[in-house]
Length: 263
Image (tube, rainbow, N blue to C red):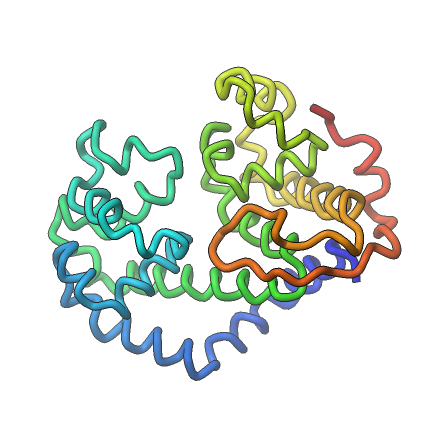
């Protein structure tokens, strides 16, 4: 099955896939523990002392690969986001600032974690990430597409894309930009991307879908049976198995491949 077929199948049945994940015993236990205990946490140290809560939060904010960087995470959460010079505000990856903002240990002593809607939002994010990880087991490109679909509407500038390796991979693949282009001056690269796309277009579901269709087709054109997920940027654990070469490209996106703006 091609990347675009796998991706569309998951999108069409997203509620069903998420429902199945929430019924898994391990995920049910993780969610129940988080919901029962996160409201008791008001400091960074309290969060880190509870390894189950800490790992849940890190996964929910797409920072599972940084779980062992406790010194960095401590600075991010303790310094908060009010100071423009804080660690969270200086990080290239916006997910650190997002986590510090929502947890709010510096600003409000974690009071937001007592709000049911905030707790639910974190749980929903945790399930989304788990679904993306599950997709990676058969095709890492589908995981990238789902990740991009989830984060793209919240992007406000191209520096956020260039500072997030998976987001950058999707855009570079869709536009057939060589990976070496990432070595260019970041301001110049962002300017080139801005000339091709209005970042606000990511909030338009139809335009976002067009980009992801293009990414899926280009990914399959670039990769054959010798390709492995080791070539993909990490968003956490990435499977190492190879995948079958593409047999055909969905004809519904043929015109998109021909007319999509090139870099």
